[in-house]
Image (cartoon, rainbow, N blue to C red):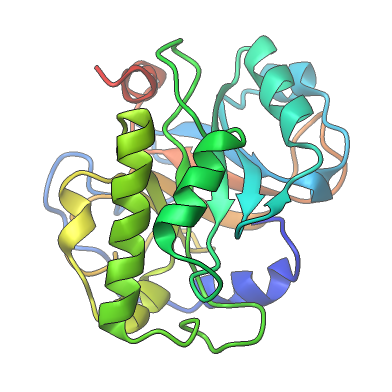
Length: 250
């Protein structure tokens, strides 16, 4: 994603080569040209001022927008992006960049929910995403937590976000980070949509226990009308009607 030191974090998404096993009709084994997918992006302040009408006219149907990081940072472009995306007809969702070594998961979930990550059934607001991946700061790749500690942190975040909003948060991660830092934990995937980061022509292997991806970030160097420079490109694993159903929890 487009964040501080994004190139370091994004490098963690590369290099997976094993294809995912098909488990259902929506299992993601297709490349970016798959017919039953819906195009989207994710953005932060690094994209600068965005012309959301041009983005929508270019065929982009959804966007995850950086809202918060840790316990005190709110993206300065979030409010404008979130409102303008909605007004342009883009289905939008907020995301939170996790910092598990600086506070409890519940603290960061509350911070997200209070600073843009709330939810409403308006056909254009997705449940927010927890962006959890390799630590770009000091403290170790897995933020200095054991696999049990990381599981507990993530569960604390997810439980709190659901308590605050009534929704299951989306989880953005890479397969390699998830399997290493949570010890191949399978717990969340029964309810929480997977947003997979892998820059390739195929999604590759999914995190342990995940049978499908819901969102797939397949490149960090996309180009979209209305945005200057590179932007992360994504797919939703289904058509727009199913994306609206996720937005409305129906």
